[in-house]
Amino acid sequence: MLRTKITVLVVAAAALAIAVTAFASFRNVSDVVGDELERGLEDRTDTVVTLLAADRTPPERDDMIEQVLSPKGAVRPLAPGRAELPVSAGDRRVARTGEGSSRRDVVVSGTEYGILTRPLPDGGAVMVGQSYRDAVRLERDFMWRISLTTTAATGLSALLGWLAVGRILRPVRRLVRTTRRITGTQDLSTPLPPAGKDEIGQLTHSFDTMLSALRRSRAKEQELVHNASHELRTPLTSVRGSAELLQRARGRLDPKDEEKILDTLVTEAVALDDLVRELVELATDRYTEDEPTSVDLPTLAEDSAHRHSRRTGRAITVTTTRPTPVHARTRALQRCVDNLLNNAVKFSPPDTLITVHVDGCQLSVRDQGPGIPPDERQAVFDRFYRGPGTQATPGSGLGLAIVHDLVEAEHGTVFAAEADGGGAEVGFRLPPRTGGDDGSRPPA
Image 1: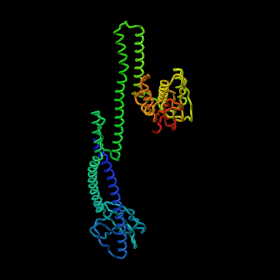
Image 2 (image 1 turned 180 degrees about the vertical axis):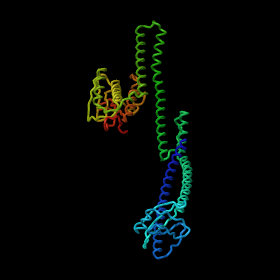
Image 3 (image 1 turned 180 degrees about the horizontal axis):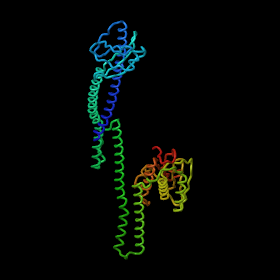
Image 4 (image 1 turned 45 degrees about the vertical axis):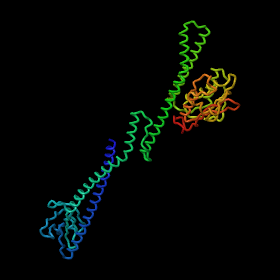
């Protein structure tokens, strides 16, 4: 269908171009023939006037009718047996006054003639009529030939267009078949056709880039499901075991043991609730509807530090160096700072200071905890990662992974390092704000 439509458009364009060229050629030829006829009529009239002035009779021509018009309007044919040219008032005026000339077209015996009347030196005028029969036949033959040529050229254009479009669309058809196969089988590993350097190749390359992104997304999704099932199993097992123990005991447990079991149920239920909430946070970007805007990192840090300090009673300070506005979604960055502070509160001793430091477009949270070993500083941003020294600390291992995903969506990077004086320094860097707050993203 697409091949037929494109071919029709190509043929229509070619036919239009050929028709315009043919019409222009016909007009040019017609003008040239007309000019030649006029020159021939003028030359013949001049010749007849010259011969008559020398008392000589001009030789006859089949395509000419010549006659002398006296000052009184009498007509004398120069060749007997020829039709007589009609005389107009203009012709009589030239013959009577001996001045000027008269030019007109008439039909004589069904044939169109061009008549030129000029005065004679001895009085009167000569009228020369030139037949247009040969010129009309020439134009008719030329029109037939150019029509046949146009038709043949249009047909050839249709054939060549059909073949060329088929060759051009061949990679598109291969790409369509492959994408249909991928859609039907859901097999994202299906390879796409080889990509060339033309526009079709660029389209294929774009499809391949999209498929690669889908493969990565599906792999992350499967990894998330696998890890989530593993992480959910532990608290669920504890909750189920505690509940079954209470069911079997049916009030026979010591109150202190029963209180411990209930505490376990509450603790594990809270852990499950936190884990499910963070899983939803990680699996879905809830901030996609937010419009990016200019964000002042020191103000964001002050707000988050104030809330965490009031909720946990921890000492949190904010320091700033060369603050630079960034272009991002405000709630997403707020979530990142909250997660960084939660992580610092969790792993630093209760009586130590936590510092939020803003340097240009970089925000970091420093604690005075055990720190992060060099070989784990990249892994802490993986989903469900729990270092060997943090297994006993409550948490899902998703907080820094959420920070990583949100910052990456804002075209930024995350980092983990050793803080000055010990402890960990974890944060992110964002590109500076460029232009106005019109919702446009900074370049990646």
